[in-house]
Image 1 (cartoon, rainbow over the protein chains, first blue to last red):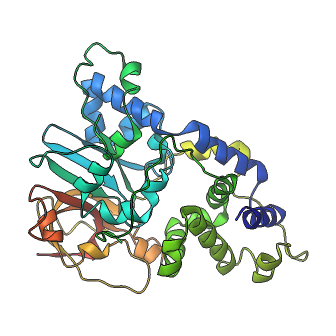
Image 2 (cartoon, rainbow over the protein chains, first blue to last red; image 1 turned 90 degrees about the horizontal axis):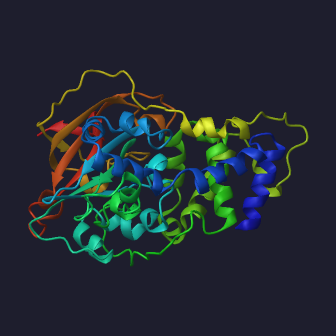
Image 3 (cartoon, helix red, strand yellow; image 1 turned 120 degrees about the horizontal axis):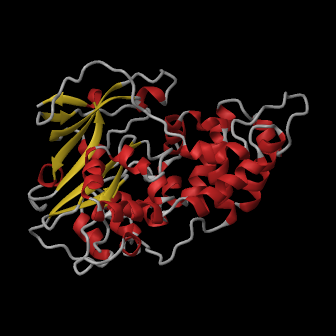
Length: 184
Length: 210
């Protein structure tokens, strides 16, 4: 594959269809500028600032942009809140839709056939494979990203974190917690 | 493939890198920088056209590479001869890239939108709707597992670009977009947990009043 990709890259650069330096900048963006740390900051802010949380639930795209996160694959954001009685899980059964500005690029399992196929029919089994057993009386809502709406789960704030700073809280937030395959 | 249950284990990986191989990062960057990126629905449809048995055996970035390669040729950016030899036709005019390095940061911060003016919505929050039993030959974002099933509208998103048209050169053809909640028992039968549900974002042409 490496040789075939290199050949296509060289051809496209030679034809002027892509800029070599732009390719490096794009890779750098996804390796260093976006990732689940961005989403964790959104979650920690929502846990500590009730007014922000209200804006986040009402209009996630603009609330998230307040923290500087915006752009492609995050143009129409919806945040769904976990509660003691409701657990949310995000999937894209059709391809690999994922909120790039706040979570970066998706992990391989998220883009793979086993997750895409099973998350909608057996969300409790999928979540159990990640190590969390949900009680039968918790409602599970699965969000299949079939359009350009991108979903972010707002996890429940862990118990015993009352005195923690926003930065310390952000460090507790995991990628899987924001997809919904785990609780915190 | 939503609703199938025998696709194998989840294969979780701790501390997963953003890219597993350098070539994967180049495929991603090429796909984003390519002039073919102007229409995301065409790109999705191109990957869906990979025959099923091959699709299931390919890694994610193998699919992206295949889709990108085929699209560059089918849209005429690269001739079959150029693709086969890796050599640019010396007689072909040199193009100008759509994205330069200095613009990459701004490009990823730029807020876009798929919202468009469309006809007023036919359905309201709380309406009961049925996903039509549509089986179009081309691109659609109505998953097979929802077709024919009844759900409730839980959100309206206004008009959005309609992929079924946009992927096929028929313009943006905006239609109202809804989030529709289907109970797990409606989709999967009586053995499902009656509390559970699946929400899908569906355009009005996918829906009828139930």
